Length: 131
Image (cartoon, rainbow, N blue to C red):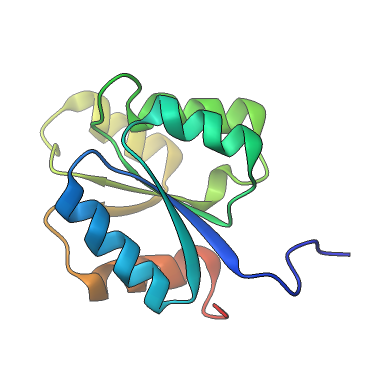
């Protein structure tokens, strides 16, 4: 039986820019998610180890532990949810970022993005049946 039945879906936003974090939170709440915020991948990894989230929106460039390292943590510790990570970044010039995105083929939003663009990627990543 799916333990998520009968509970609100949860999202974790990993973002060190407060304005973008607020936009993500508002947009995801409008999509029916409860939302937790983490300022970097290190904090997010601890949170993900203690709580199962239905969706992760992760900035690739955060201090302490970036989004790529967070994803590697999720692949190792929680492989069942690694496919529900959406990445954001303003850094499309880095060969490391391009290689990572090509390798993993995750949901992706280049910064800046609009709430409607975020909604579209969320619906594609988890399906349109958001409660």
